[in-house]
Image (cartoon, rainbow over all chains, first blue to last red; front, side, top):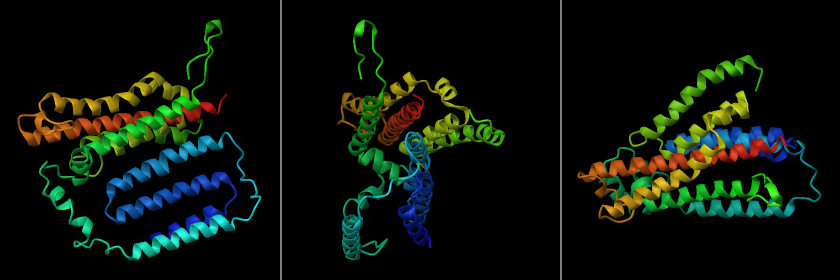
Length: 173
Length: 139
């Protein structure tokens, strides 16, 4: 049922020309995906999806929309090549997914490798996701935080207004 | 600033709870769903909500640009600081077991500070990107 809704939203998204409607629809899409994540018991991911996908990125897209026209221009060529490429990728992914173990199968290889040790929970934090993220995979999370920081620094470097200093010296970026 | 009375009243009612919920997600992340990233995003979303309703100038009074830029870097530095603290106390980099006499407490302490670092950086970055985008439209 949820996936049908997601499919409908995506089809409408692809066909709508008004960019405001596109932004609103992508917010709806994010909320639907967040609900899918809740249905899959991944509440942490659902919170992130709802807050980032539906909240902040919608606001950012609206801000970007403020700077440009609100109607998408007519495409100059037929989208057969991108369409066939994405269809081929989709078929390939479905074919690959058919080889995966069943959903929530305890015998799946991913549940046999390091997961038993994670679930023994030697750090005794009730939320295993937090334990894995911050403790077992602390290096990963440090890297992710650095990536987020780098993204912010990149935006500052690109968008900061340059104020010319006195004496003709150009301000730093 | 919007003139819409409904939005302003609802916003004033909801924003404290959004910020409180962010802190709850942060400090309760060991026990329930959530953690630093989610908390930072929710906190930033609360401020963005405030900025949408009451205008950028008011939001800049609450979270000035210099503060946001400090937050941006402070989180990563806090994270690395926790790692170095483990190093100084005789463990490996990002080793939390040595942060307290009781290893389990040390783990909890390490996770807490690390998650706080993630929250601060994520919140700073989200706000900074929003400020940058929002202030571009005016010029």
